[in-house]
Amino acid sequence: MQKQSDIRSVFIVMDGEAIEGDVLADVELIGVVTHIISKAGFDNCPVM
Image (cartoon, rainbow, N blue to C red; front, side, top):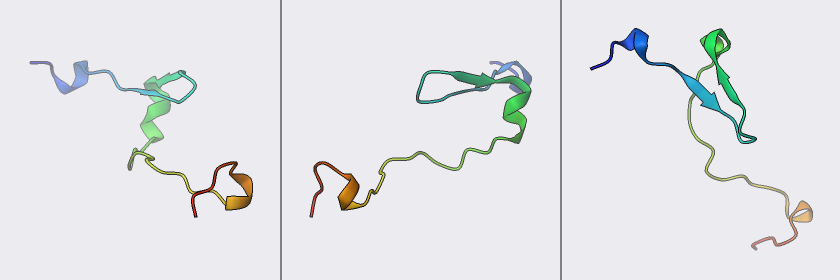
């Protein structure tokens, strides 16, 4: 079993870039985006 200090934290963004190290010290993950709501005027295929 690994110690907590041995586990690395990496955040991978949508374009594939990995953010890691001290930069993650101020990051708080609160959830995952599952839906995005857009105005019907900006959507080529709106559901109404």
